Length: 310
Picture: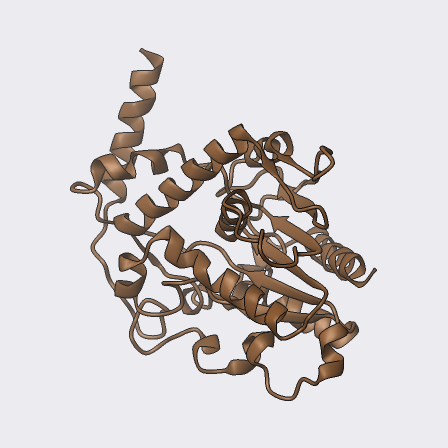
C-alpha cells in the first residue's frame, strides 16, 4: 500500500509539472542565445590560440558541466585557476547543450558525452602530458560510464578525476517515471534566476529527461558490477549532503562500486551544503549563497589545483 501511494503521488506530481514550452528573450532555450564556446576557440585548450610547445607540460583540467547547463558552470574555476596558477582549464560543452532547445530534445545521452572524449583525445594527440577531468552532476555520470566502457583504455589515462555532486540517483524519484508518462508529461520547467536562464535550459523536455534517466540507470548497473580505474588515475568525489538534485546516496554507490587499479576505495568528501554543484556560485540568488559556501568553493578549487600540480 505504501509503495502504491508513493507511485500515485509521483504520478500526480509529474502530471502537475507538465508545462507548455515557452521561451523568453535572452533565454538559452531560444535561437538568439548560444554557448560562447561554439564560436570562441579559446574555451577549449586544444583549439586555444597562442599556446606553445612549452605549454604542453602544464597541467590541464577538462571541466565539464551537467544536464541542461553550459560551460558557464565551470567559468569561475577557469578564471581562478588560470589567474593564480599554471593550470590550464578546458571548458567543454556537452553534446546537444548550449544550442537550440530542439537540438537538446533530439540528443541522446551518448551524444552528450562525445565532446569529453574528443577534447581528451585531442589534447593527448597534441602532446599534453598531464590531463585531468572535473565533472559536475551529469558529467560525472558520463565520466563514470566512459570509464566503465573502456573509453580511456587506448590512451594515456587521466591523472585525476574530480566528481562534483555527481548524479547516480536523482533526489526527485519521479524522474524514473518519465519514460512511462511521455504522453502525459511533455515538458518540465525549471525555475532559476534571470541570469541562470541565459546559461541553462529553462525547459526540460520529456525526451531529455528520459535520456538522463537511462544514463544514470546504466551507471548504477555499472557500479553494481564494479568499475576499475586505470592504474595512473586517482578520483575524488565532492558531494553536498543536502543536494536538491543528486541524492547523496550517489556518493555511497560510487564509493562502493569504484576502485583504483590496486583495489582501493576512492576518496569521498561529504559537504554540509544545500547547493547542487556547489563549485558554481555565479548567477545564483544571493540569498542562497553563504560565506561558508564561498569558502567551500575556494577550498575545493585550491585542492584541485594542488593535486593536478603535484
